[in-house]
Image (cartoon, rainbow, N blue to C red):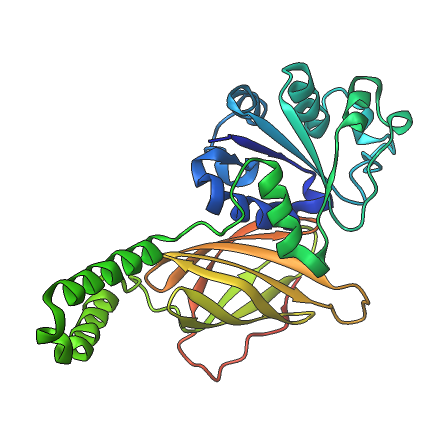
Amino acid sequence: MAKIFLSYRRDDSAGYAGRIAERLSRVFGRDNVFQDLEDIRPGADFSQEIERNMASCDVLIALIGTHWLTAAEANGNRRLDNPQDYVRLEVLSALQRKIRVVPVLVQKAAMPTADVLPGPLKPLALHQAVELSETRWDYDTERLIAALGGKHQRAFSKRQVIVGVAAAVIIAVIVGLGGFYFHHEKEARLAGAANFNSSVKPPNDITGSWTVGWTPPQGRAVRIQFNFQAQGDRLMGSVRYPTGEGGIYDGRIEGDRLLFVTRHTPQFETDEVTISFSGQVSGDEIDFIMQRPNGAQRFIATRLLNADEKPERRVGK
């Protein structure tokens, strides 16, 4: 199974990185997809940890958004021209190690040509790119998975495997015993379904409202409200931001873990924003990692006991 390293700029394509990492993890396995924010141990040296993971990976995905090439440092110099730039180091390390490099274009970004890349990175322009579009996201990600050597079909969850095995056992019993037990089929299925539901019921009921107070970098404190509705392993609902409300897409419940993205057009803006979330549920708390186009943030959301309570739009500075 291929080990995949995801290289990206947080202020360029962090929101996309989270969505891609989760999709690839379903096919290739969580341990085979490396994404720096979630995978680096607390206290570990960032550069050493990246180098360690690069040494063991088979494929590097260079996630390229509209600011990947032009992102600048405080002094105005292009980041990519700095020999210590992390993105440059990641891509260069892959090229030097002869690791397969797959450029992935998001936000309608164009593939950089050799003449605009720093000298050591010019070979990147020779690699075939894969474009991911919001309008055909599922189709494009399946193409990426196929290009990486994965299967097109969605990986089966543990719940789906259990259901399949249970169904096979029921069918075998019915066929083997014949018509003698046929009239008990309905009761047996109902009993089996009840037992199955009780055995795989998530440890926490997340249906309802959750809230978090969060302070963006160099911004005012705000509150975000999550309104969840769980149906089996599907997660639906919405997230209320200070700038508007976004619907939940691709929502999944994997045991005590939540995975979803939201899309909304912030107030006074014209472009839609995609934000991805991964959360770990523990009692009445959810440990979230929120990945936005301009960076990532970690916080704890708590259950909103009063469903009619509305979070404040902005509190303090």
